[in-house]
Image 1 (cartoon, rainbow, N blue to C red):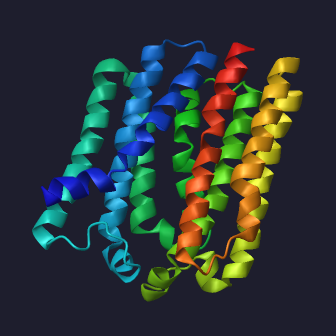
Image 2: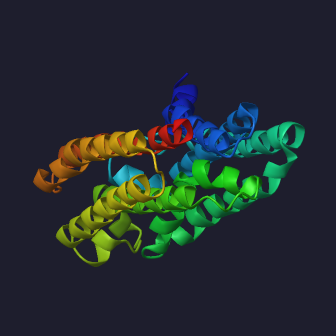
Length: 281
């Protein structure tokens, strides 16, 4: 029971609905069948859970140092079982694509390679690891575009750029949370090589830049006044609820970081909402 609980917890299944919603929204904009969006969403959800599980397996020492209850408290046999289970998720994603959407296989393979290299090598490299993680997180938006070769939408390109920038800023905050463990394994991140205060400034600049990119897309890409008004409303809501409080948070306090991370998840909800509004108007 403890093994199953750890597996489900570390797989972060709560990300699945947002991943699937983003994929479906993009397929709606591309005028593809909703089944394709759902299939891609499930494939990406399986890959995301693989990435989380594999990451936790690779970060046993860091999580133990940071007192993060992931996999380090399990015995070695249980840890290996979860590692095998993570690769089974990848196999399931490939099988799903083979039977329902063969065009997705190359993208699934690319994301699998990206996540594997990230966990084994790239997350140890300053900024590159954050960038790869940010690109992977926003894959529910760019994966359908690559699968269907639909690169002509300037709006979607801006949303992807905004999403990568947003998650890049968020990843730096997560590095602040893990700074002690990263120092233990000599991992090069912005907080370990500079300071927490500099990392906060860089993160906030990225988060604000993301919001303004999304606002630009709402103002200049779609001619609908209602579309623009709704996006400005969501933009201001995210600014007030998710980003502005970050200026007052004591990032030396782990509980304060958790509050910010939880609030920034609200910002991630902005992307499928904007996509759906764009489709409607």
